[in-house]
Figure 1 (spheres, rainbow, N blue to C red):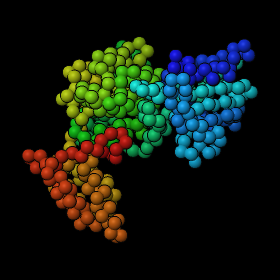
Figure 2: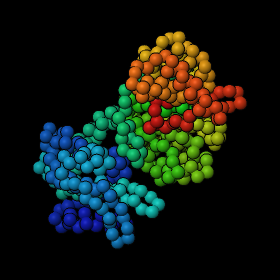
Figure 3: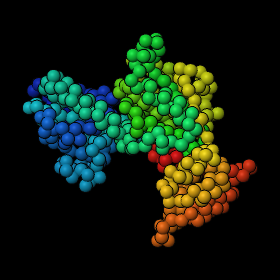
Figure 4: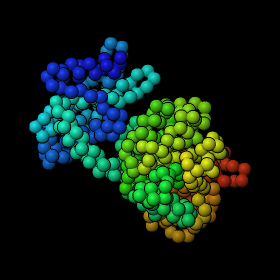
Length: 419
């Protein structure tokens, strides 16, 4: 009823008696392809014979019974950036000329009391024309996917340029993780020859700030596959999880990342039911749901349901534990983050004094030293690095553990710094 009311004006403008065919688009096309149409036409229009006839973007589109409140932002495409709109996550009306035929789209995000959902419809007089358009758009989407990460319900972010050398963890663990990722994407035929479902599940666990998010960023930057990331929040429910998994499966081969898996078992941290999660994980390796490398992160692996344990292969096949860095790794981190600004003696001294510091804390030492010098209007010195260690130790002294190690900063997540 609500969807029908919201789309009624669009449907009325395209009567069947005049040859128009109106269709509601699939969730996959709505969330992945349709938001790229403005960018697609802008970059490829002249080459492919496409021209934008109308682009009317909405900054607000909220349903109220009997009324759709929306604010028209701009009808001028070149003004969208000035108005704060990106090339993606477009809500509004699109009309384009595709090789001499008109194609119309209407995209909106329905923001109700309990749910937020993006819905899209298309209108055309020729099914063949629409299929031709989808073919070219999917090809553009595939190339675009290799340059960006789809943050579910949050648009896309660039993949960045991190390499495996930027991930400071034990060499054996890094080699194993890299092998698992790189051997998956192009291995469909090998899995078939072995009679195995083309899927793998990796669980990255350990305290906050110890490299899990950096590992995900490195994988995203290096893998030649679509990458999807879903951070578990208090608003994440079964429906959201299903749509997320379906989109990743449809884009196979893909890397599907679920952040903070332990929130599922913590009361009030999400609205995902354990039974639904387990059913989805079991479904990834069967039928249509193949070609997905599932990677989940958890700060508290001990709180996970036993059904999610790597000891039960099929859901999570391998477990990688990210610990606070060793003396050798702390030394490496200080050298990398310092980028030649600090002497070796100062680096070794600070590395020895920072047992128990997380990767994020070691990085913060360097940041503190740089900011101190910047505020003083001078070049950074070794003493700045040494002083930052003492300042941070005093700052977190009240939170120190019984063994004298400092607690890990809760600086985690895909949008956090290189932790």
